[in-house]
Image (cartoon, rainbow, N blue to C red; front, side):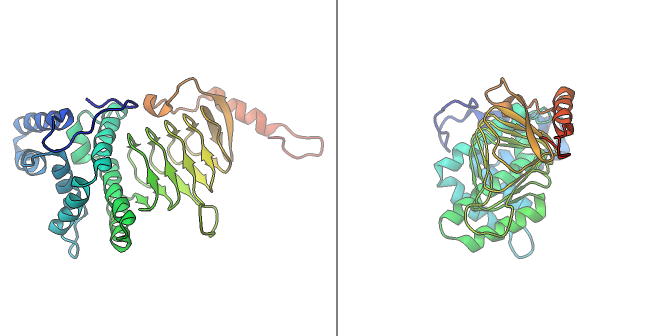
Length: 293
């Protein structure tokens, strides 16, 4: 098995691939338990010779429309994924992240077949590869379709590491110059956006192992440090130190974290104590009547 945070050898079609073998076993079991889905499971998983081709089939059928056919999309996905060792590795590390961190994801096959956070992330990876190859119009067409189908808007130029969890994913926005490190977890409704209409490097940089809570808005070319946590609903406008928790509007550091990678533990509740501390800080008034934060 691939282990989050550890270096493992790459798995390709034809090589021993424990995740793919586990996924096929899951699909066979589910087909036996729910015969009405047997054709769907065969077409999506069991008829393919490797994970990459199964993924291409699933994504193509999710993203097809009357003018961009599933067969065309499958050729695009298959060509990119089968010839990119980095994507092959990321596909598996992302699967491991979903299964390990999301208690609602009981198997690898569930992530591949049913979780739009996984679908949107892998579709982005193909669009990103196309963008880097100079096929920018096609990359933007994919971005548009991904946004329409999954309600996830990731610019194909954004840089996203591996071992990523997009939990629920609805409403997620990641801007053009954003960078997301390895082993990051992002909940639904997160925005990694710019703070104006300036060109150039204008979006957030998220350090590896960070955990970004639901509805958090992070704006501008600022850094969220490694192993940091942003509480749900926070508005972040300045740099966040590594291994700290920030909460509030605007966000402030409310405590320091013991976990190296909060993204792996997924303990993203901003405790009552943290908010009490934030309230105390925000309510202090200077002698001139202004708030002392």
